[in-house]
Image 1 (cartoon, rainbow over the protein chains, first blue to last red):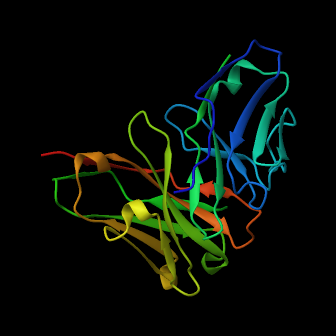
Image 2 (tube, rainbow over the protein chains, first blue to last red; image 1 turned 180 degrees about the vertical axis):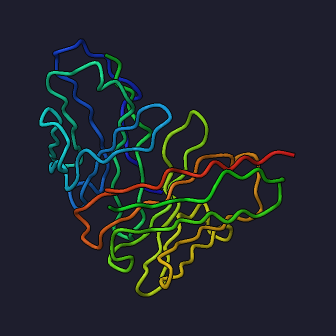
Length: 106
Length: 120
């Protein structure tokens, strides 16, 4: 089955930049999405269509894509950004998958 | 405003079935797929499948094939997810989410989640 590969955790100091990668063979052909989940809460969409930000999501969150890897970048990390971040995409058959999630430790 | 309101927590015996309800409002139900996602305690998000509200077509993750049934009632803008032959591994929070027909869009609205506990 199709898999997306993310690191389990990333540590970053406040004000610095955090980058989370997500790799998958179908990513050159399928859009990627990113979700932020804080403890006890439902996930929130923060990036769609590889690099688009929904309204209300701070500009410090950005997405990019290169080949089989997509990257979520958090610029000027704030304490409130400590959360688990999941990438998601689909394979060509219409089946969706999430990465394992990356815990950002501030 | 867009809302997806799910049914309450359930405690089930192993081998039983559970049916989770997702009542929607604030948008045209048939303009969006309904997907289901679950999360076991301390674990990541797991995609279960989707239902197309226009055709009733479904797509399930192979892990749940034969055990999951996703249905809907468009007259009351409600989606359902039934999971059978429950085991302790099915203990999780189950979410319904809406997904645009446009592939570029992600899960912009989520239900509040339904906790299902499977225990003897």
